[in-house]
Length: 207
Ligand SMILES: CC(C)(COP(=O)(O)OP(=O)(O)OC[C@H]1O[C@@H](n2cnc3c(N)ncnc32)[C@H](O)[C@@H]1OP(=O)(O)O)[C@@H](O)C(=O)NCCC(=O)NCCS
Image 1 (cartoon, rainbow, N blue to C red):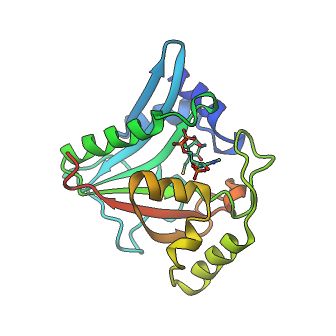
Image 2: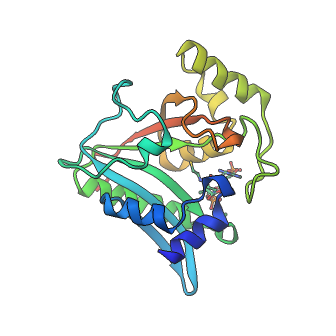
């Protein structure tokens, strides 16, 4: 738990870090944490919830990150809700994160999960130049696409969404689709303007 909290502290802006108490609470709820370890520390982690929930009903989907990341694990497993993925800044740009994601998908599929769901950050909405280890420029065209999606409910073209480096990363590595935008999901994520873009991937044949 201390090693995971140390990884959180290195990888996330201060307002988005989980401390040991939060991590302990999440484990008690039955959450799964896959980690990649190097001899003296953790290099990456993926935290998720095996759940009988499905993400398609807007009215049932958690309203904010607090609710999303504190769902208890439940059976039968139909989805995994992934609420945290991070790589220590010194280990970015290697294959660690891909291996973690592919291993996570294979394990979730073996549990019987049909869907992997995640809450994607979108730091180019407002930019993250002074925000901890991330350096991402604000992108007014991307911001306009997210604002229009929030206001009208109509999903913008994929090209405008994958202007953002994090959403592009998920689209490329996970091969996911984007399901909905959630305004005020995590107001502390100022670079994303508080938004999260929920992504989804059918993993039923990945075991
Ligand atoms: C997102 C993250 C896990 C990617 O890990 P990584 O080892 O850097 O991944 P890769 O080297 O395989 O891929 C890097 C790609 O991700 C992009 N990227 C994604 N999120 C980024 C961010 N917050 N800052 C900078 N680049 C980011 C890079 O631009 C690059 O894309 P490109 O090749 O099109 O330029 C890592 O940057 C990280 O831990 N960020 C902080 C935590 C976070 O934002 N997690 C996502 C939660 S939704």
